[in-house]
Image (tube, each protein chain N blue to C red):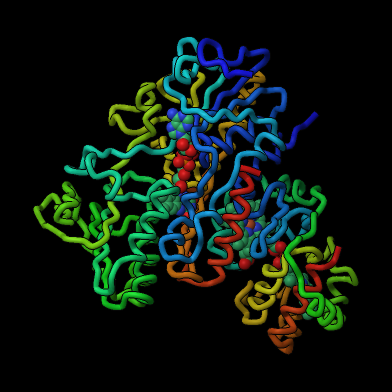
Length: 176
Length: 397
Ligand SMILES: Cc1cc2nc3c(=O)[nH]c(=O)nc-3n(C[C@H](O)[C@H](O)[C@H](O)COP(=O)(O)OP(=O)(O)OC[C@H]3O[C@@H](n4cnc5c(N)ncnc54)[C@H](O)[C@@H]3O)c2cc1C
């Protein structure tokens, strides 16, 4: 039987330094990789490696993933059942976020699960700090500038106040 | 039961890995051998009952964090992973008979991991061997960290803090410069007339050069940086450091980071090379080039083009563990590369970082890319906390 460190399990050892064991990040800032849809995961790695999605931490590691085997590593994280973030949430913020989330549901779905085939990520249970930061980056056109996959979402986010982005982050983090 | 003190301290019944040193490299290796193959017994030898993280310990000097927030027990390694933890110092290694000595007794092993970190070359600075207790290094997080913080906090306004940086190679290339930021930040806020004098043995800031320079220029006019200033003498009675060019610098508080080499046990066991300082290893298995079945990970190693960092020690510990298990099971080693990230705090909120990723090319570690943050930001500070949370739990959880 294959152990946890055989095959792909041994190729993702370096990721644990930031994303936790098997991609189950427990911090507020680092995204959970467990349960990521492979299409989205692979695009994220390609975007970091090409410099389209800017991250000084991820650009070198994305290039390492490409050396070690992108498909295999994407499949590894997709196969891990996501353990939702346990970062404390403000219940009132979660409720406000629920109300504001109707504009997101057409793409991200009613439970935030996204669309695996279309590359829309599952954002349910991600840490709130990570989600809020990404929303602010999208809004300021600092995440993946010019990427057509996110033009529509960015247009929508431009009209959303920063406080509401925090509420949306809390709401999506609360989803199980 | 009374502890055995002589002979075979715990006769071997199955396959066994012994790990010397429960720091960033050793504790990780111990845990990951058990994860990779729970049928292998693992004994971890470590004299300290608690793990104190050097990463983030510069924040203790500026009062931003208490040392207790960087201090962890070893209990989870036993409870969650079945590692046998022996609170003792290894006193000798006998590669011929595959034994590690602890005082009068010994443990046998199939494979040994040696991860003792660094030892200081006290004798390189005249006056230092006699002044060890008052001239602090705070380069192994623990009582010295708290003691240096106290010295800084009791300095008067106008007092001078002098830090001496050893020549490369030393533990954590950006560490001294992060420390300088923390002390400069603290003094700027609380002792506006005080200054920080940096006596750097190196030609220039060793790591993240432009980033640190930018931060110092923008925020810390209280830093007086002097490159090519190797300290060769300390005299606590006159509070004076002397450089190799004969410049005398007086201090109110001094932080003298001595030159370094591999941990003493590695030197005594003949694991160091011609330089008498560091251990050369295979780039895939971390097996010593000197002794078979003995693997070295962490700061004690040299030759792998990665910095002496906690992140690299952790990566080496995992890779060595996976490949020790491969070898013990008669399988070929996997060519797994390490990675490195060093965040440095430039004040209480903001950080910068350097990131390196590697691949294995013909059995050697080769860098794919090094990347720096464009500048400091509070986001990198939050991500530094995320890194620490994850990696501490990767080592000990
Ligand atoms: C101020 C400072 C800041 C730093 N910041 C960072 C950072 O932000 N990021 C980063 O990645 N790295 C950082 N580092 C570097 C990091 O701490 C080291 O690279 C790391 O600790 C190396 O791990 P190691 O396992 O080789 O040694 P250590 O972690 O020092 O562990 C060695 C262990 O071996 C034990 N030991 C020694 N001899 C024996 C013996 N004979 N028998 C049994 N046990 C023994 C010791 O007690 C110790 O516990 C920093 C270092 C300092 C000083």
